[in-house]
Amino acid sequence: KAAMSAITDDAKKATMKHIETLTSERKTLTDKLRELPTVDEVYPSDANFLLVKFNKEMNKILFDKEIIVRNMSNHFSEKHMVRISIGSPEENKILLNALRG
Image: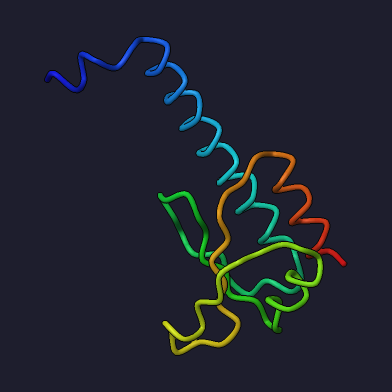
């Protein structure tokens, strides 16, 4: 209770705004990724990242464009699994443009 009462209303509002943006961007990014021919699957997520299965190696392509993602293929039996953090609207546009080629 003491910790919660120490949080100001402004901090609570800022946190709620951040959560709303994250939720909205996660939905938008999920929808846009599913439209790409290089994407086989975007797995459901309630987190601040998406797990995406591509039909070809994307880690190096994204790395060469200075976009860092986490290779998750070692954690799954599938190849080309990538963890993508949800970014700002601008960051997500950069990611999608990079994936489009």
